[in-house]
Picture 1 (cartoon, rainbow, N blue to C red):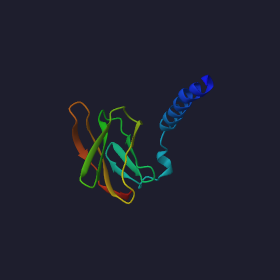
Picture 2 (cartoon, one colour):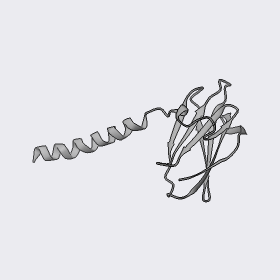
Picture 3 (spheres, one colour):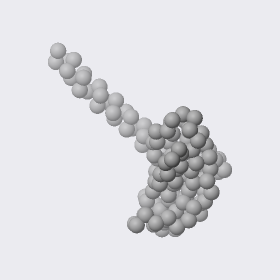
Picture 4 (cartoon, rainbow, N blue to C red):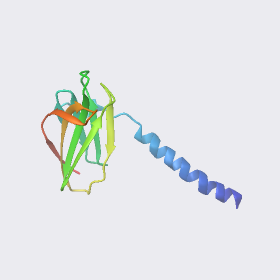
Length: 126
């Protein structure tokens, strides 16, 4: 009985650590090609339909933060990556399969959440 109780405590903890460990892996921007995704002068975004992951890259050492915007249905979401040049923020979204998604790349001032400029919108289907 003691072993069963221990297993019921340990197994969920191991499963949680395994899931968290997988989320920390870096996104390989070279694997998608430059034209896959949205770009602005200082940031790049990509929406991976399988799993609904959204990635925001700061690719310019200009002192600005990278910003990604996502629209689907009646939702408009804004995600900031204030971690500096060459950093990527990964966001795991929950979007119904078959939903049309639009996204773009922007940059701006994280302090005050002021977007300075954006690139073009790109579409995908979850």
